Length: 480
Image 1 (spheres, rainbow, N blue to C red):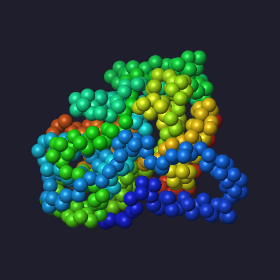
Image 2 (cartoon, one colour):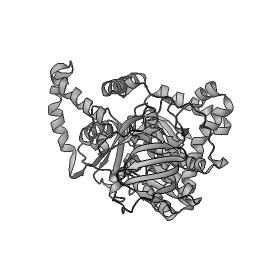
Image 3 (spheres, rainbow, N blue to C red):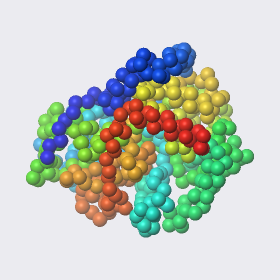
Image 4 (tube, rainbow, N blue to C red):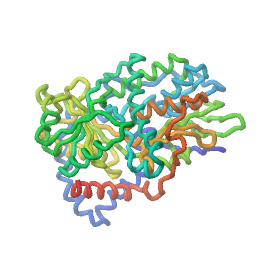
């Protein structure tokens, strides 16, 4: 089987070029042919005022790149043959390669951009046990025991990350700060409390509810109606974490070839032939570890992944006292809404890093930054006038069942679809897929037999997805 190449630009904001192009056309035509044209015209003065949010040194790049810059690697000749080729140099690929290289398998990592250019250096640095499907629904579908095992994979993922950081002495500013989850109504508070209280003992976790009257001990905002603290969760510096994984992997003997896109993947009788601009490589085993950046030459996987742009901003340096009032316990923050926000202080506790999902019609970092700034003021009105120093976007990968998937398709190993919880899940399932390549029993997971279904083609059209996003926001606003 040959996977045909599709030429795509390297800029992360054009990773889904068809979506970007059509969204721009839609906005342009909307001014003349769309009922919302008048509205678009009216908000132009607002957009002009929004230009005042940028600091003089504003940069369209992840804040994390200041301490952990993305730099080109050396460009050695590619080997003619390897035991294992890994496509993608993010957390998944590096954790997989670490397993195979340390087991003595010759391992080559191929990356079309700079190493770690995608979401491994663009995420929010929040680490938890976030396996998103609810236990009750899983139990109805798969039975109690299988449901328990699936949820336990999320717990194991966080434990793996903590162990990896500790045993390998990874310098990534890991802090077990705990997470505060904000809720938007008394009904949502009661529902969350009930759900946590009935958690089976096999998957129980530490938590404590925070009523509205005590909320100021956790967050300097009146938006929420209370919430919950999960003490086991924490934060890392994602850029540093990635560079440390890169170091460990190369020290183990793996070779990393960045700016070396796999244009065609050809199935051979004894493995695969990978065609790149720098030559061909034959590999007995191949791991696809591209997650939200899975290109269309990998058609089977591309149809099963929905890339969603997740935008973030980092403010200018703030006064120490202001930072202490924003997040008094220095926790990572999220909320219970389907399309919510997530935020935290920077590792030095001098900036607020605020993230959220906007829409496909906001395709660039600047427009996404402006939308996100308004969302930040909804949570923290006291930040009006604060400037933004960094703005960026990364693509997370959603699946139809909001669950990660790991396994093999026609001989090609893969792990992907972390649905916004990639730090822990991609590290853990990257490790697991590496063990699968080695053929060890440790590579087995509770997700191995999970049916990996494709998305309907229509869902990838920007107008459809943007409409769904807006409707979900409206529904959650009124239904909380």
